[in-house]
Length: 94
Image 1 (cartoon, helix red, strand yellow):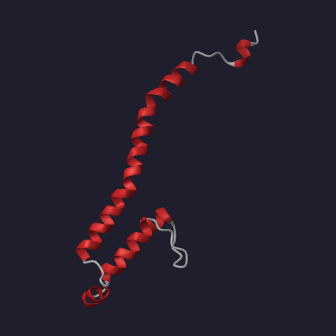
Image 2 (cartoon, rainbow, N blue to C red; image 1 turned 90 degrees about the horizontal axis):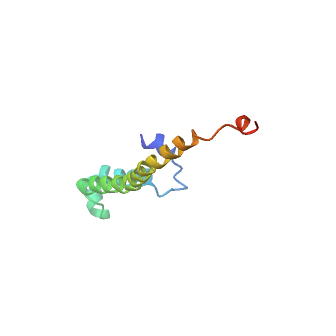
Image 3 (cartoon, rainbow, N blue to C red; image 1 turned 90 degrees about the vertical axis):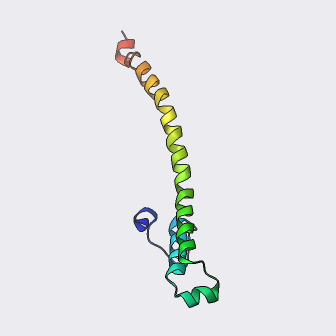
């Protein structure tokens, strides 16, 4: 699903987005226990929590934008209703 949203990955050009974070945490979580311990990787549970935290960070601005858009809806409706009262250009030419 992330590939559909963010597009394919080029390992030479990381984008520092949710997909890249997910791939990094997934790599660490899939590493064998001894490698994780040796390299100081997070535990599987910490990896999961980190991915969830990054998803939540990605969702926050979307929710904020959604609220802003919904708060503008009554204004948009009012403007649309007022535009119905404005005559078309041919009517003004009479």
